[in-house]
Length: 320
Ligand SMILES: [Zn+2]
Image (cartoon, rainbow, N blue to C red; front, side, top):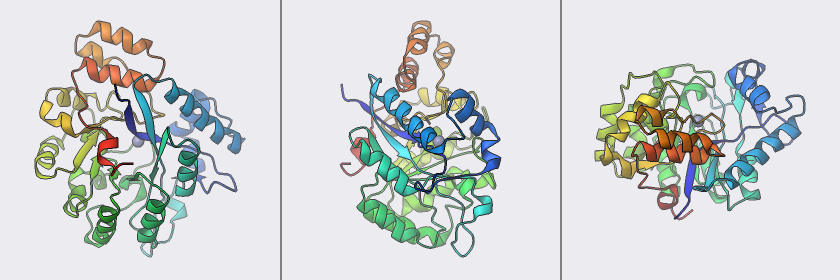
């Protein structure tokens, strides 16, 4: 059986003079900081060591997976002001593209580079070209914290370049809790239509869920985009979280969507087994809980719910 590609794995690093990453004190003092320091036991006072450890643990967990063979490592661009300069005050977390490209190049059989380019940055088009030339597999954006509206007409040239370079766009959808959200409406699914119109392969994160428990306002539009755009996909990352599980249960009842679902976890966020119980699959629940890594756990949950992943990133990424 072919192993799956996880399209949604976050790369995390603490700033060092070499890696070009940034993390604000505000963020380190919040839930993300706690996740990294307490749950993952990373030494916040030793940035180089912590960054290496993060990558090493991820590598070990992925190598331990029976079902998932590769992961797209995601970078995180910052916020930019009207003139396209980095807005340091509003950038809480930045994982630079060079760091993403270097980490994935160190283990190319395991990792693909999911660079992040905010279309608002003044060198956005050059950065797309540069990253594509270095083998980037996709571009990730999180408009809520990167403070831009993906639907603005002025970003159409950006999408045209992405389409020409065959770089898929992985876009966060819904509210953003982990980082610090600003204008949450820029996470609306409908804002991705201009990118689709320009011919970009768009992967909407988290199964298009809003992250607001069972109020799934994007549901009808998700179905419409699947029908209208053959290049529209959704990843299933983070869907075992309580605030998104409603969407997972709904997706499971709609096999017509299965051809457009891509595997994802949202690593390092946890993957839970309890959705198996909601589907009455006690045996699968036990098997999923017993899984040694969260990649296999997520696969087992999806199978218990009858969600078939009929597409894989390997098929749509232009042979990457
Ligand atoms: Zn994510």
